[in-house]
Length: 335
Ligand SMILES: [Zn+2]
Ligand SMILES: [Zn+2]
Image 1 (cartoon, protein in one colour):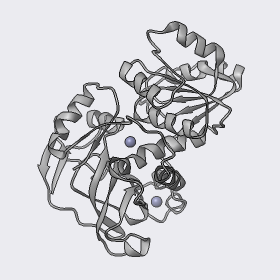
Image 2 (image 1 turned 90 degrees about the vertical axis):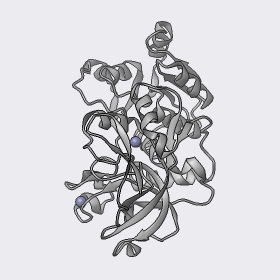
Image 3 (image 1 turned 60 degrees about the vertical axis):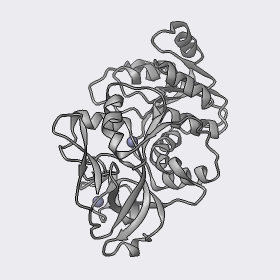
Image 4 (image 1 turned 120 degrees about the vertical axis):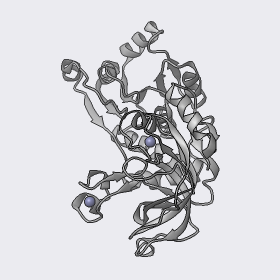
């Protein structure tokens, strides 16, 4: 099969020919129809991914073959599925409650084992979510990032009467925006330094989109009014503190951005406002099924969410552009 793999020159990817993968015990072979490029793919390609690894964890595809025992786990050849990209031991307490991400043997597809930047991949049969016919085309590959955002919105306990601020309008910030809109929230302020992302946020239904660096007055107004729920979707140092500054009294801060360096917060801000600061990474099974339900019923407004699609042969070049810092909508591989 053709695939796009890490070279030994971080973060450069290359098109390669690999043997077709074989589904192991309890696994399915998936013919990839779509795989989103995630901000975390850009991070891991620059930092930790091993040479030869096939990245990509936002996988949709058609089940092509089953390994031993996979049928017993509900997988069916020919079904179109979204993949929760988890592989755990399958029997520890974390795996038993559907949270293989907390298993000692946890492997994320597209990081610790091959993912979706390929014509074929393998996944645990129990982590496949059947996609109804109403979820078509590129939306099939959006289940994973939308499920991340769904989990964050659940963690935030968002109510329709809340005011919401979303810091960072990359694909996860935009997906959080789509969910809070769907809940009926009326006041949603998004901040992002990139003009194209601010425009996209307005297209997706934000009340206002502020440049956090250039628009001091806008940021001051946001801080003075305070948001009931603030989503930190940027993942850079200083953002959790800013989220706490922008939260209203009794507010909630949900940290979704992946910041991998030390950071400083001012605890008295949290004390004074009695804030709840919560973290959201990955998803429960229900985040996948709720996302698929919402997509099938066309309940999410996603105009412009996908910026463009790219074929396998063009992925290494497009990936390099994204690493160099592109803005705008999400890029999805359609092998
Ligand atoms: Zn992702
Ligand atoms: Zn386990």
